[in-house]
Length: 88
Image (tube, rainbow, N blue to C red; front, side, top):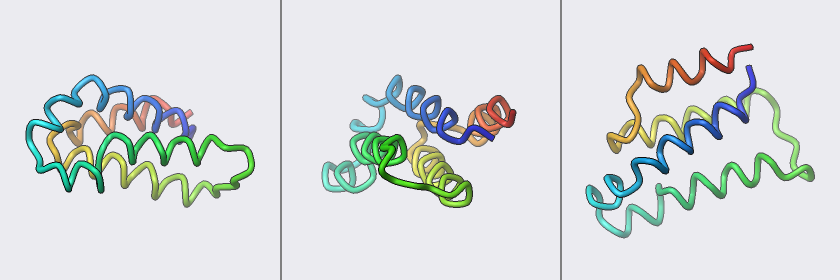
């Protein structure tokens, strides 16, 4: 599975719904589990100096998708569709 591309697609969908995110949760939570955190995670994954095993990529992808779903920015079905698309 191309988990990096699944992360990118998940992040793009979340970004398209980001105003809902910030309208629905307190600012302190935004800092801890928000768009900037997701983007930072993807930056770390894409940095060629970092090595991420497939297992770790899967955990990070799952965390991003779970956090987005918990905030109503992504449904389980949408996450499954993204993951299936990149199953490869």
